Image 1 (cartoon, rainbow, N blue to C red):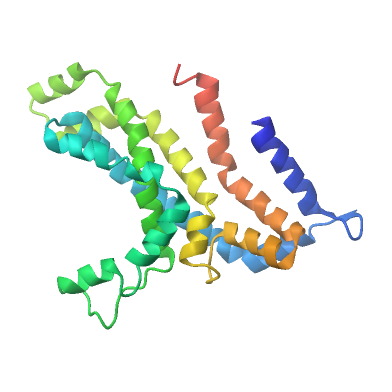
Image 2: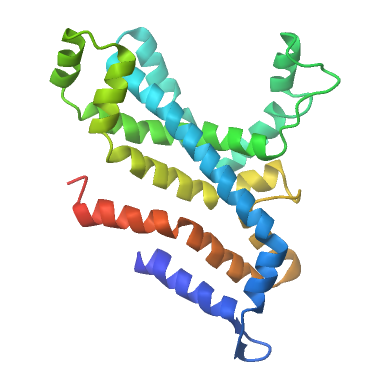
Length: 260
C-alpha cells in the first residue's frame, strides 16, 4: 500500500500543487483541470458506477444460478463465464469496435429481428458502449468473487428454506445475499476501482470524443501537451474518486480480516 498507493498519491499531489517554472505552490493546475475536464471527471464517475451496478447485479444472478442448480448446463456456464477474465482490455477494445460498430454484428442482429432500421443503427461509440464493454469484462470477475461467498454458505440453510416452501428468488434474497453481504461490497469496490482507472478500452472505443474518461485526459496531457501539472491534478482527482472505496476496503478486509 505504501509503495503502490500512498507514495504515488503524495508525489502526484505535490506535483499538482508545485509549479516548477515559478518555484511556487499554486492551485492553478486544479483550477484548469476542473474547468477543462470537470465534465469528463463526472462522466468517468457515473459510467464506472453504472457499469459496476449492472455487473454486480448480473453476477449475483449468475452466482446464484451456479450455486443452486446442477447438471450439464451448469458446467457449460461455469466454463464460459470465466473467459473474459483472460482477455485484456486492449483485445476487448478491438472486439467491441467490431461488435458495436454502426453496421457491426450487434446492430445487424437487431435489424435482422426488426428492432431497428438498418439505415439508422444505434450508436454505441459513446457511454452506452463503454458501459457494455465494462460490464462484459468485469462480470466474470465479480461472479467469481460472489460465487465464492455463496459457496461458503452451508447447504442446510438452503434446504431448510426449500423445506418450508421458499422459492429460488426468496432463497437468493433472504439466504444467499444476506449471508454473503461481506463479499458483495468488496466485489463492488474492486470492480469500481478497476473501471475508474481503465484507459485502454475508453481510448479505443471513444478516443478523443467529448465527454471522455479522465484516464484519456491524463494520457493526452502527458503525450500531446507535456502538461504534467494538469495530468497530476487529474490523477489526484481520480485518486479521490476511489479513496472512499479504498478506505472502506482497507478497514473492512484488512481491519476485520474477513478472509481469515
